[in-house]
Length: 237
Image 1 (cartoon, one colour):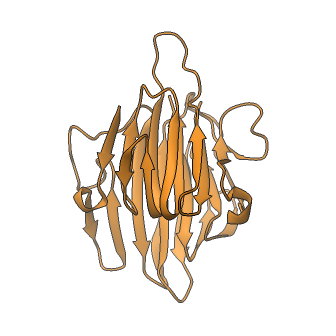
Image 2: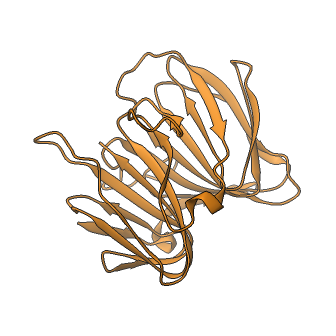
């Protein structure tokens, strides 16, 4: 099953400094049919104007992944962590028992990010933060794991949930396949794919730039670039 979620049909709000589109119910946008996808709770497509951002605010018991599409985001939190994450790179914040953080665009241009929230498998863990560069050249023509809760993915950022976030860049007419993580008997994996740039087909379903697709019960994903493309895929419980 592949349920296409066109970018033009996403909910959202434009706050002036922030233009946000929501793949799932979030803040003032509410759709009872789109409360999440498995353990995936939030996928926001945010555009943050230069010299603005999210002031300090709290979170708890959520794995929050930030994928920077353009520009850069500067992080600071109550644990004393500070960091600047550039386009193509990723940061992860495990909110755990509680953390306050700010996210500012201190650049001279608009920053564009995907903000992804996944529910942790265990609540009440100590909070943590980390960031890592993932050069797009290393993802040319193949998926690279960016964040993961699985053993064997030591090169990825750690998240505390049985999920995997991957990214790939594909040239026009190039193809890549992905086999979902095997689910325990009686359970289902929930995949969510978003086209960060370009246009692709996924098992024959065409997706334009910034479209999403909720996927389950597909043995394999065959992804073909209809033009030069960048895709981000979450494989979650």
